[in-house]
Image (cartoon, rainbow, N blue to C red; front, side):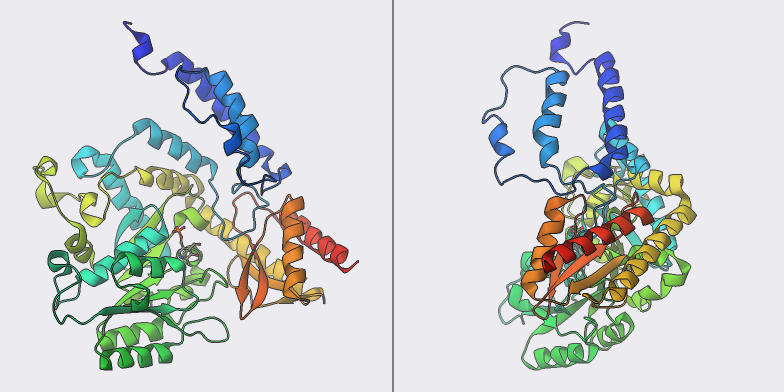
Length: 475
Ligand code: PLP
């Protein structure tokens, strides 16, 4: 071969390092539980070990790999650990990791059907599977984005495009005498809703935060009153974002009641089920999506609780034509012969280039099967409920809410400082990792079971560590 130094790594070297990488990953995954989830490093300490300038001459994989172990690995938070109980789970299962590997090898850019027919058609097919798994009607069409934040942004953009009196795509948000747009969500909604409002020109003032009941669910009566007030004051309400599984407490908003308010006032209903909607693949949990059949758009994240490596977020939309109205713009070089007979996903969002995300999800669903996914999620819910019972049986702790999904909200009956100290000491000493929230001024601990590698033994061991840390705090 001429000038091999001007082409890629040789196939032989790739093969050798491919084998070594997979061996390394298999070892890493199998002894993950012995590692402390959250690294004990100070800010800037990783950066300080990385040269300020890129190397002029190429380096051998041996050196690069050894630096990965010495410099990078000590600063990694192990989201794939069975002892990761913080935030919401996000686990990369074996088939999902292999899917990512193949995605990188193909390196397709599925901006239009022609630039990778398989990527487009697999995306259509697996989203159809997921729609059925969730029990959503075939009135919904799916699109994959990277995250729920981006899915929600697109949903609200579609809602804005659906406003019949305005052509925002053409005229922008201005216009003499045009009433200001506003939308509604609850005080407990994820910050991504407000961010979408900012990005879409509503301003933070245009995103109303409706109050919640004692279980942190949106108050549909207050919602309707707010819409009435805003209309009377000359605002133009256009959208409501409800949540199935809020970030702090996994509360489920009364979507049915919210949908009838939306229907009455002609508002677009978006539902954020980023985390909890995965539970709807269980027939016995389908009811968590009651009312969602009336939604115009609905987001859930297989990268949270369906064992697919980050990133993979699915937006289901009953008006994909509105996504298209908001985002379709085809320069000459992207015109193709196929016309309307194919889907060109670039028409449904802000980005042109798109990863082949459907491949990893396809591999995950085929490997575990819907039944295998169901059994795992069911087990996580059982373990979380079990953990909740242990909390209730220990008089030093209080369970905040009944456990609905895989997440438990609880606290020591003491002060906020005591709860902060407990969390700090647990996360610092490892191996487990928890996170917190604040409800009505109280610091609350969150224990979320959802990693694919977590078993009853991990949950039991974690509870013992929590009890021991609480006892030490008393001393
Ligand atoms: N919606 C809810 C209810 C969430 O809990 C989260 C994150 O935890 C998000 C949206 C944002 O998810 P992403 O990181 O995929 O943007």
